Every structure is written in structure tokens, then in C-alpha cells.
Image (cartoon, rainbow, N blue to C red; front, side, top):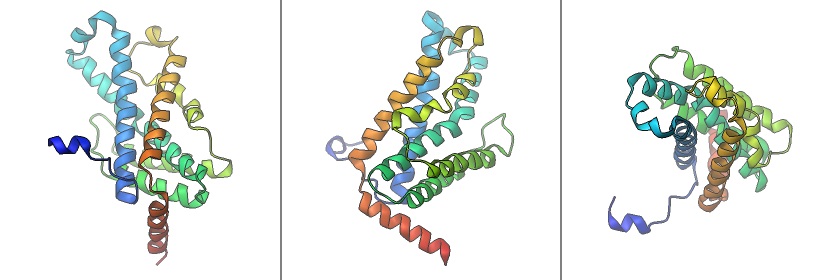
Length: 207
């Protein structure tokens, strides 16, 4: 990165490609921050030693991948809710975001130790969750992780005896990070251009 890059405005979210980048970045941040930082904090003063153990690093990595589809669903729902809250047609918002999530899933490597069907199941899970949001008004962003944070918690790479009192802590962490992603989206969103891109995708698929 050059010095001038520090002063450039972040790229607008104005089409499918830029939406993919945004959702992909925010999903990676959400799942990694919530997993790695939590594990480091829960490990206490021994975290540096523990994080050098191959078995523990493998467990943290497996937890990160296991929770990736859930984090993607959180970020995708946030993006669709943001667009709906600014007046975009719910069906167009959800279909556009779902298409972005499918492209992100298609770009991921096969994680070690997971079934070959992992990403196909992830796509069904994310698409299904997004489609269900159309039957009701969009949730407040802070409430999106309330449906799923317990599953995220169960997949953390720590012994249940150490994590059983941390569900509310994790819930708060997910809510804070997702609200921050919402703020970033509002700062970078060019809704008129993104809506046109979504409409073009729908028209192209109908041909």
C-alpha cells in the first residue's frame, strides 16, 4: 500500500462485485475476531503458549470454518436489512444479497476435515435464512445475532466448563461487530447504483 492509498476513500458498494468484497471482508472479520480473540482472552496468561500448540490451532481453525456460514448469514441479513430500511424492495434486496453470498461461498476453499458437502449445505443454510427474512419487517441490526449466537457459542474451541457463562458476552461481541459493519455499509453504500445492478442481475437471469 502506497502513502496516497491511506487518504483514498474506501470503494463504494455499488454493484455485485463491490458488495461481494464488503460482505466477504465483514464476514471474515466477524468470525475471526469473535473466535480468535475470544479464545485468546479465555486462555488467559497462557494464551501465547497455547496458540503455539498445533492441536489448539487446528481446533480454532475448525471452529472458524464451522461458524463461517453462520457469520455470513448474519452479515448477509444485516446487508439486506440495511437496504430494506432505506426503501429497497424486499425481494430485490434479499435476492441480490443472496446472490452475493452464493458467489462468496463458491470462492472458498474446501476446509480440511470437513465433508465435501460443507459448502453446499452452507449455501442452503444462508439462502434459507435470508429468504425467511422476507416474511417480516427487517430486524434491527443489533438483534440479528440473537437467533444463532448460541450455536456460534457451542462451536467455540474451548471446553464447555470454561465457556458456559460466556453466551451473553459472545452475543454482545457479535452485536457490536455487526453494528459496526452496518455503519461501514451506510458510509460506503451507493444504493441507486446497487439497485440498478440487482435489477440487471434479475433481468439477466430471466432471459
